[in-house]
Image (cartoon, rainbow, N blue to C red; front, top):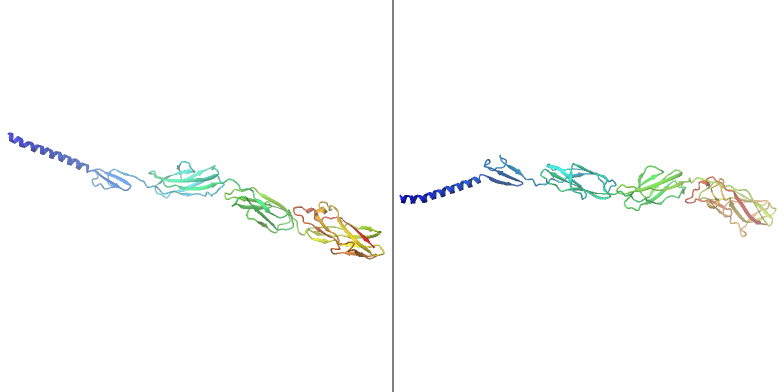
Length: 372
């Protein structure tokens, strides 16, 4: 009995060890019933209900999306620069998983926005609008942006550097102008008409006689307009004339020698010189020799307003003691050409309104001396 018991004890211990090892193996086999499968962009775990471990079969499944959507496309009519202090933008995304947008102006924080965004009362200077696309997983795209400048300051008024005289006989007019701000364009208006784009110099042709007014203003690249620079002038017809009529006879007496002087001139035209024909009459019974002749015009015209001292230029006869004019006894001599006959010119005075000289008359007086 004692020998049999001693041989059974080692076998029992060996049996228990085998049983324990079997239990450990079964436990390890149980753990292998769960499998882990990694895929790019996704994680999948399957239990013993999905012993094949293949994706798409019944079991728990979770996807992780780390792909950012495409940047949005901004559509805007915002000019740069602009004088407008308001701005509006619209935008779209071509990403199929786009869920929303984030917008900001300048350095402000991004905030959720829809497919359009507007801003008002923007300050002078440069501005930046930016927008991002977001998807359902919380990914954001790179930003799309628009940069522009708000400019509300008008350019300085232009300067008219060349223009007709204030009283002109030409029906054409050329006016030149410039502005202190570079890059501006110009708008011109004639006689209160519509503003039209123009360049310097601005030329007008075949204008009617009378008063005219020209105005010009500058426009900068943002669309701001300056104040106006203006010039007014009057076109006097080149055929308009003034009439100078003779003022009767004047008697000169030197050493008892008498003679008469008479003459007149009409239809003077500005800047055209005319001879004043003079007739010298000798009532004496012997030849006389005229040694001096002088013509004077009354100080003012009839009707008044055209003063002779500023509007008339009279060139006297060249008659002198060394170059006398012989008039026969009881005879006459008529002077019809210069330099023997005096001349008169109706001046065209720049910057002076000479309308009063049209069809005006002056009284002419004559004096002289003679000897026998």
